[in-house]
Length: 34
Image 1: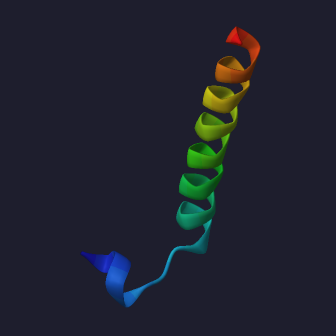
Image 2: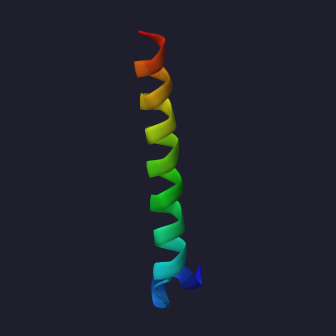
């Protein structure tokens, strides 16, 4: 549980980028379908 004592901004950035990419792909596919 070292994430609480030692913040990992790199991991946080990676997770945020991954979620953002998945959301962008989902929105793009939904827009392309209509």
